[in-house]
Image 1 (cartoon, rainbow, N blue to C red):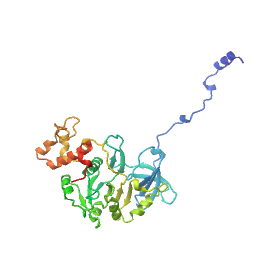
Image 2: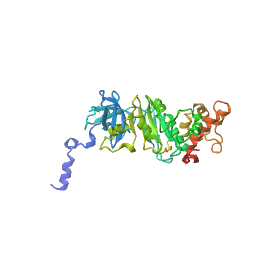
Image 3: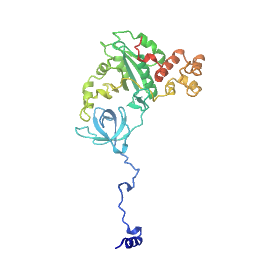
Image 4: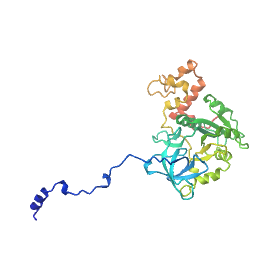
Length: 345
């Protein structure tokens, strides 16, 4: 058959004579997802390379290893998240459940790598308190770190608690005075005494701990959770058993509650936090802040000469100490506080 005759033969064909092989992407997709009515609720207590350890809500001592279900995509799952599990939730060796849902978070502890990094990282979810552990000596306390941790707590919806360790080496009075106007709990511990006041503050709460290396945070955790080493070993058995000293881990308190150790946090980048996020933690200044000029950082003169926060002190609604404390936190967030890398007096 000549090419011309072949073309004439094709002209007699219609679409019913053509067989079309469907491609891989032509199968219709559905948005219907399984309801997983039989799912069980658990709290994420550890993570290692795509595997999460979860403590069942019905029995916190039962630890289940789980993976993220495909239907969740890249939904982030962090320590403290409450999740729904399906599959094998027995917790037996070599078993694996699936995380099919992540509950809405009541609070988040977030940070960025530095103050210019726009990518924020959620470190801990659903903690009710942030225990900021600071040594009074060896190493000396840094107010800048305290201020930045306070900013992260206020912006994330956590109640801050300051824990001053090693009071047998130095007096806590100056730091207590510096933060008295912020009206949050300040606890003082000694190396030779049990931290009974800290244990009482943490009872029945989910508390995240932050602190620099050497401030006594590990010692404090070991006193609060007598079998902390064993519990950490259970959590680090996820995957191939990498030690969890570089990741957050949640440990159950003997009398109820959880303590989430975050040894990987050395400082807080605050690029993700706006001045208004901090002001919102000081209710007496919120209304005045709304009257400030656009772009006001609420730092006062000379940076923000038209800031309206001073009027709240002038009319007696708030004290000057509260405003000074607020502006110290704002300055720390803005990277303007030269003292943040200096030891406290």
